[in-house]
Figure 1 (cartoon, rainbow, N blue to C red):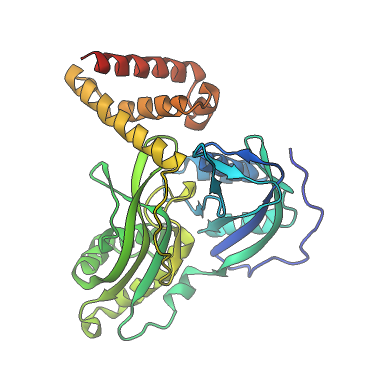
Figure 2 (figure 1 turned 90 degrees about the horizontal axis):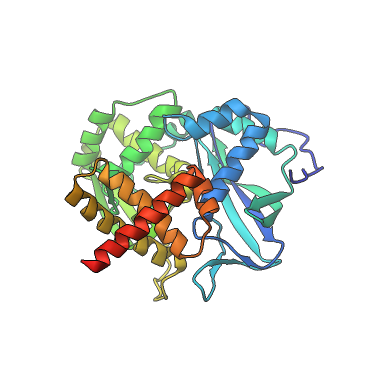
Length: 372
């Protein structure tokens, strides 16, 4: 186990009634090296293990709970891509990592954990020194978000700094449609605020009332979570209201509160694996042309293989074709990029022998397709 810091905070880092807070960690690489494309899985696992060491019940809930996850995390900011397309770490270089808590139990665990945080964050043999931490999103409560002054004609501007996507009818929707965006926030609000709103009624109001005033977006593919490729969007969007003077005052206030919630909870799905990172305000960097990264190429290969395997299984009438095809595609694509079956099995939380068998079946399916 990595050593813990000796510095001890004399007081809690935020008020006792805090329900929401966002932290940013300054990390420093200890050596040069490459990270594997899905290193966000290792970040996720490291965080849950930190919780497990002091609060196993909370860790089990965060891992297995069927409600919305009461935390989010980013990927590492400042990562560069090497000639091979793999994410690179440079000795002495600093990186930033954001983690947010969305419920009082997680906030309280964080406060206790920060009394003696670990000295190192281990990413599968690549240690990062935890140099410092700070509050990135202020400690607050859901009631305080709802009490924020609401202008007569409110707008909500948001910047999506990592690929953002929604699940819709079994597929990915890489567009910030108002109902999808605000449903994403409302789910978290209803789970953790203690002041739920009727989702059907509120989303009907959003559909009728909330407009996209402007946007600056581009799409990109990414590998996130345990398997499969996702098409998401990054950029900025500003939302406003049609006929704001006539809008329901309670729902208008909730519209503003959910916009304030966005940086804490992120947007869309896979927010605990670095997707959907969201910031208040309109901040758009000018897009630049770049060669596809390893992450882009891996995502494209997984998507290509998934489509191929789905088509094959439909021809043979296989059950659960989409899920099995995505699993095979993830395993084979990562294996083609040189990752070990042991690491893939660990990330997917599957038995090694099962992963080995799936890799063989996937290769055989590719060969059969090439012979047709």
